[in-house]
Length: 111
Image (cartoon, rainbow, N blue to C red; front, side, top):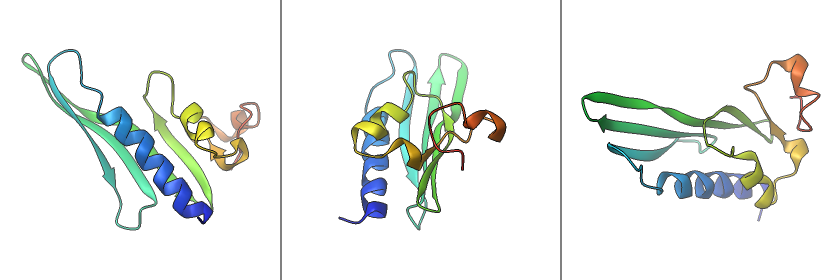
């Protein structure tokens, strides 16, 4: 299996697993949204907690130049451990939510 296909399958599977976990409160649903070219993945939540509207992006991941760019990671334990467990090398993961000058200290790719 080629690397790009493996990355796409891993990202989708990880996000789908998180989307399938029901919220303990409110009527909140999770969905994985995938771009047409399958290089951009977003885990969204939407619903109600009593009278409070809940809507937002939990995770935003893109595949850019053969690397996985994590733009936003709102999963409690983060998505990086799941990516590594699926076989993605740390030097192929960019923690894009950190400023570029901080990324070199994260143990992941800088860009």
